[in-house]
Image (tube, rainbow, N blue to C red; front, side, top):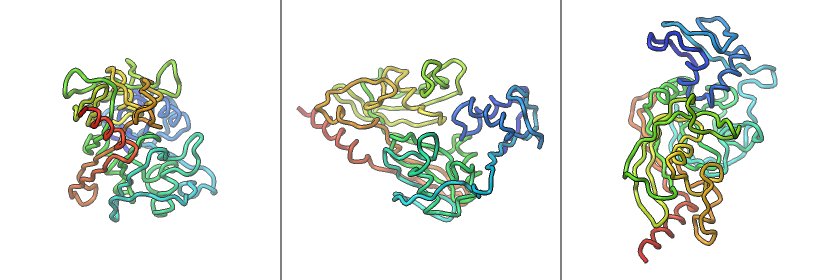
Length: 314
């Protein structure tokens, strides 16, 4: 990825500069690890310190190198798994991801990820984007279902990454939350970073990355509300962290909020959080044509809504 420093951001630390602009970076600490590995350049020169200041007009480049001949292209083992491809052309594909599927290999998940399946389905994406997550320009949590766009060419990858950075892709989610928000619509504007008390969690923290989540109430039930949520930024666990921060955690979330529902109800029987990426809208990265794809709630989530709706009628 390549970024040009504007006058507005001159004097900023390079790790902070990249953490705020590089959509694929999961955290500032990840950026610092990449810098330490020698995979960041400023005007062609290797950066050795995360505290290095960037100057106006300088070009910052991230090169995620793969070492060793055994990892030609990606090093990703193609996986024999079904993908629900809901849109495909020569440049991009949209996949409706089921809950329980991890997007790309990582600690504890070296195979049977969406990326393993994608490399098997489209071998040509091996050299598209980053070696450990070819074609991926944004992510969904393992237990979040719904729509994900994959870049099939380098041109599409570069443009989609820019579009994510510039908030040019509309990402809509359906989320069932505990309780009833005070207003029918709102914005959560709170920085997100690593939880200082739980290394595997994110939290609203003062020195976190700028994060904004828009929501409005679609339906209200006795103890729950169904929200339509739109991401402005896309931090790790952003929706779950932000909704928990305003006192309305996502139903079924065992990490954030941890509120229990009656085990005899459909909500109480949920095996994962009620969060579904329901719509993607954007201008095609190559043709400019408008792309708008929607995804219905999967069966486990629809069962919850059906039961809650029936309870409202009693």
